[in-house]
Amino acid sequence: MKLIYQQMIGMLTTIIVSLLVVAALFIHATTAAAWENNFRQLSNYTSNLEQNALLNKSTINGDFIQTSERVLSGQHVNFVIYNANNQMRYPAVAGGRIQSKYWRQLKRGDSVAVKAATTNPRNGRTQSITIFYRPVFYSGKLLYVIAAYEPVEAIQSTISKTKRSVLIGFIISAAVALILSYIIARYTNRRIDRLRTATHEVAQGNYDVKLETTGRDEISELASDFSNMTDSLKASEKEIQRQEDRRRQFMADAAHEMRTPLTTINGLLEGLAYDAIPEESKAKSIELMQNETKRLIRIVNENLDYEKIRTNQIILQRQTFNAKHDIDNVALQLHQKAVDAGDEISVDVPDDLMVYADHDRFVQIIFNIMQNAIQFTQNGHIRVTGQHGYQQAEFSISDDGIGMSPDQVQNIWERYYKADPSRKNTKYGESGLGLAIVHQLVAQHGGTIDVQSELGAGTTFHITFPDEQTPDDDQSHDQTA
View 1 (cartoon, rainbow, N blue to C red):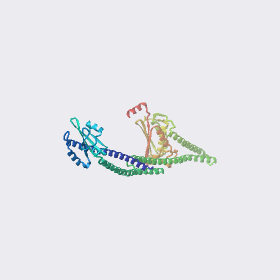
View 2 (spheres, rainbow, N blue to C red):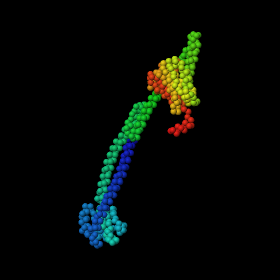
View 3 (cartoon, rainbow, N blue to C red):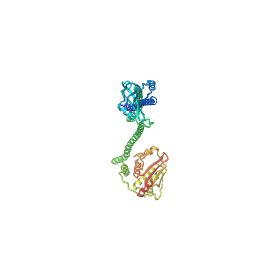
View 4 (cartoon, rainbow, N blue to C red):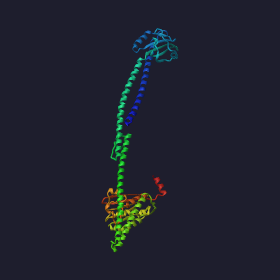
């Protein structure tokens, strides 16, 4: 069964059950009110007779009773008066007696209301009437019993009209409920259909589907969650495509990086094998093959090193040492490369700046970033600064070289990514792995590294290394928190 019909049946069932309960309660209340009103009227009539028709202990004003019956003839109300011996005194005809069960109540001083098929005390015929008995006492003794009776046809007619009106109202309400339930169910079903259509679109690979989320009900929340899901899927698809592009680029770059030294070595070996290389150049050729072999080994080792760092397979031997000394050594090692590029290196690090890190990996991080700055800066200035921040050592390495665009900044941590593809073969053997390794090493130290760069205006790397945490530091941090 379709959802729209399920919703309609559910709503109609609820509405119809509610209407039936209300109708039953209304009919019951109306019927009870009709009977109560009837007995109240009969009680008032008997009270009036008690005051005006009973003149004394032995005299009954029959004229007043007859006048009252004529006035109430439209309601078919009649009166009967019984004496203390349960004998009819008015009208002066032989008539029935009050049933013993009612007579006992009357003798106790209780008024009695009866509605049933009973014997008419005036004519002795059995018919449906309502009777109200009122006992009249004098000096504590039962003197008379005044009975007022009325046929139930008028009351039943009123009750029947009420039931008929309720039935008509029920039918109209059910019809209106049917129409409204269809409209509401159709509206809800259309919203679900739009969601289903959007799901089919997503299944076909279309992640640009948008749904209205203006409401505050569960379907609107589901539509909002669906929109968030499509946005995530769209972002994931872009990321998957980017990673696939990077994978292809990585395979191409890796093959290129390895093919270049292999091609050089193969060409030199062929030249040596066929004596195509002059004797005086053989030593140079062998040296070149050794350099290319070392370069190839370095590329392989860097790839292995990167994977070990990325998968946390290396163990850092962290210790606290003086950062100034090692940074000066790195600057000294790169001095000649900087001179060849026309660059100047300046180090502004406090003599007592201590850093908690793996010594060799710290040197590797600083070396790679400074070397990268030299490679992309000509006739410029490389600045290395350091300071001790809050529970961490902070370093900045900046240059005024060619800089990078935002897209280049986003991808510099990828393996084999090179901000300047034209510099794939420099005399420094750039492989595109240095910054990827640096990023992983800093992360494994629990530190941070970020880069700020502007195309044509230079680049600045900011690196932090957290201090060693002692038990006292942990307690102090907890108290501060």
